[in-house]
Length: 345
Image (cartoon, rainbow, N blue to C red; front, top):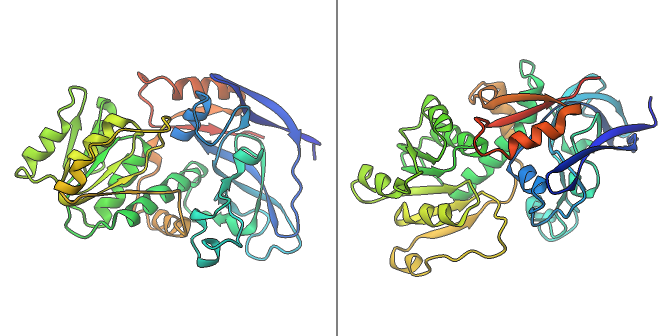
């Protein structure tokens, strides 16, 4: 086995390089994975732009990962060499107030592997067995990588408290928005509206069952939602973009007593909000942080084919062309939803 492996790092805004790193060795309870597929997400884009609020450059990158187990530590009991797996890339202390209550997503020292020097855009990845999830028999590696964003969507859905028959609006038809759309429909939301600026994403949303896919390039989505809900607005809304304007629109789309859930990551440290709307309409705003026991649900949903993950993959790149993959990710005119980096060995 080689002594070093290539690992992608964002070394400066707009520049990704494959740098040599020591081959990881599994500890007592660790699993060594040969990486097969990594998908890129919005937080990766923030890193590429040098604007991620919790990941200063230079930093390794890639956290939506699937691959094959090639070595295990002596204490590993649940997975075996040859298993196809997805990785939950979280790092939690296990000892703080929140971890002790099973809320590891709120760990006081919460982090992710890429922020600690081990990005998924590499040939190999080492993780504690507790964060390794076997793929369903019929799932491919691309779908395995997408279990991570599906878990994000499932957690946001739980935070929202969405109930059967409630109306719902999703601002942002990227991967998280489209996964929220599928999850909300499975939970019995009706109708589900989705809002975006890109026609090709809105077309995908309609194919996935949106009641209406609203083009917001003229900023009229809130008006349209009100028109389609007898002037009331929706009971539940999600912000899955990370922009001040869409956050305000998400709040404005709510009916009295409604609840908005914030999923998008903001590059700005502070955002102005219309404060009086919270009192006058008795609405609420909640944040959704990552996932908490949601990977297990995501695996079951994929096994039962309750969600369509494959449809989200619009572009494929090799690890050697990772710079091109990120440039496409940053191109707002590109018809991309999920960019997949395939790792050949």
